[in-house]
Image (cartoon, rainbow, N blue to C red; front, top):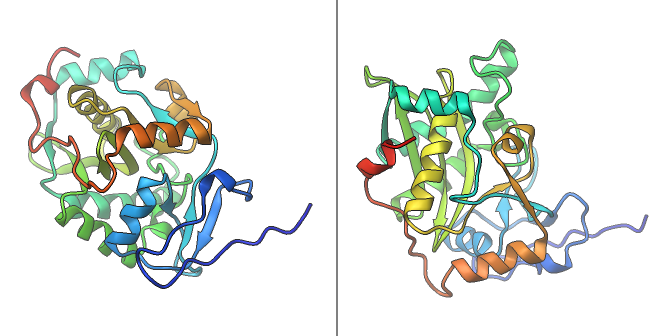
Length: 262
């Protein structure tokens, strides 16, 4: 097998990424280096590229193929989850506790590794590479996504108990009509699944084209995940993200209709 050379990004935050269409690495590793500035991250997401690394490595940038996506209006809601949603023993908010959600995602995997008797059997709470969130949500990553949130680009869905405790949620990046899911967590049974169901309802209501889930996993399979070729995925990105714009169709509050008719 010929040796693959992974290019280093240029020092400027707006220096170009390598073309994902010419990807050589079998797992989707595209480049290394650079920084986590908003300019760099937005440029990455526009091209279907995301960072994933740990404290022991340089920043690594990925664009795996095929790409796992969920289609708003075309995903599968399992019957047991539908019953849970109809019981409505929870409250849902948008962008009210982004830091709480990203911290919940960062802690969920480290706790799971210490206690394999999870409260939510069979659910993968991390979109990015199936990674250990306690590793890949580094302090630098945390700061970078909080900055994107403050800019109105990164968003969270929070699931609360009826007592007001944060029991689950998810976060990701919204550009145009594309939502790039990053990670989710739960502290109570089905809480992260409720967050994902709410996400898909919101995306359908507001005209999003896809939720990018990055890589296939068994949990996504039960929800009707689609696998797109790199060419197909990039075509959807071009259709869904207006050149030069960072705006999105993400709502400012949870519509009441989103909580009904499950």
